[in-house]
Length: 285
Image (cartoon, rainbow, N blue to C red; front, top):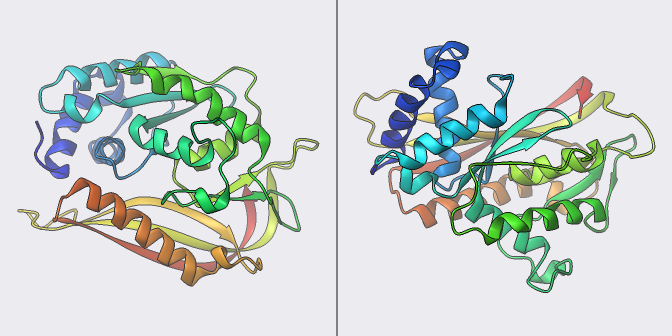
């Protein structure tokens, strides 16, 4: 079994090289980046990773084969037993998802009785702020019902002792569901919700706060690759909501990932959060 995150990344990169489609589609640097992103999920640091380095013709088959390979490899099988490839057919997007972390996330929205959780009963998972993607931005008072429905449908995956290597969302999944669901899978504190009644997928001249969470590696023998981006996302600036203030957002992100690292118990890892602000001419959901 890989004894550290660095060792796990190397083992996964070796498996990636062993699959011709991945080896041909990704440069050596991209193979390492892809392997690192997948390992952040398997190691329990992120709930999900959205594949953005390649667009294979048959992602269900390709990524299913990769996960099956990692589940049978002695160096990686313990970490990938609960990792699933989740395919979103509307945009043909692929996610690698840690099912144990997803179970905690789903429970934070839908406790055992299946009813939406009260805000006072939400666990340490940073409850997303749902924002209608239009100008002016509007914050939802409650979790959109269609999002709760999508999370409820994913509960079936939690009943498997060993989950399937790949799972596809229903073909009728709409953008109104897919976009905020992706934010939940990616641990984003902000979840944009496109309006169902109109095709609003981009906005212009929007002031945004940008956040990047970085994983720091200690005790690297070669002294290289000491930082790895965990995630990047944006939030509308100037909304009168305490949880969206940059100081509060940085604090929440720091606490969230520090808690994940405590669960992993790897003293060589740390996390930092960076914040910048910018007026963006064109924003696409």
